[in-house]
Length: 253
Image (cartoon, rainbow, N blue to C red; front, top):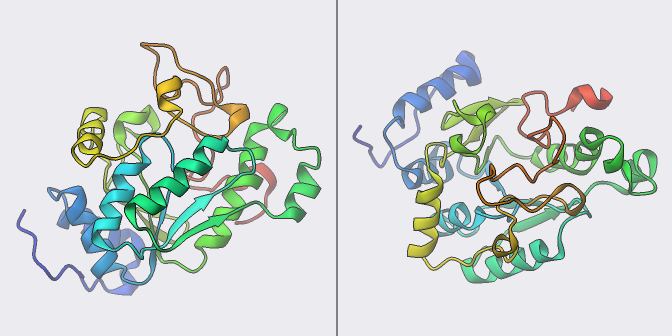
């Protein structure tokens, strides 16, 4: 598909977000990740879009792409207060190396922690509820000022992501998944080509990195995400559920 410098589709707002997303997916069906990002950041959602990043195992690739298009793009980073110290150091290293000028770190509210997890041990009894107050609720609050956000999810990561589109509707916003069709090999090749630093825990056997209590090492041959919530029937923290985990406590966000 030939792409042009003018990307805005001028979708009639009365058609709703579903129609807008359908049009965008058709428009960018054969586009590269960089073309999708450039269109979203500079044109379609200019001034109203943020990237959400965990600064995890393969986050550097998408962060690098965004920095090449506009390093002032807001990048939202959720500090659950349960992260590996190495993740916080990696965040700071990438911010400096990539020249990211608007990284916003958000945390769970003191009120929510005092009410739901005063001892800091909720993860032991209810990981869904823990993720909800430490990730889902804080993210929804900080996203309130944006019409769209960028995610680094990829189809190969899990069965629940196998049919991921480049654009989707999420809680009244458009979510952009520019790396949806990328393979693990392509991620590694891009990182090597651009000399991007790797998360220090990857070399220690952590190919997918979340909070310390719920992230385990992965043995050779295991699914890369098998170390997340090991032993549980859980594959997502909740920020990518269509309901944003509302069923956990009925918070309505």
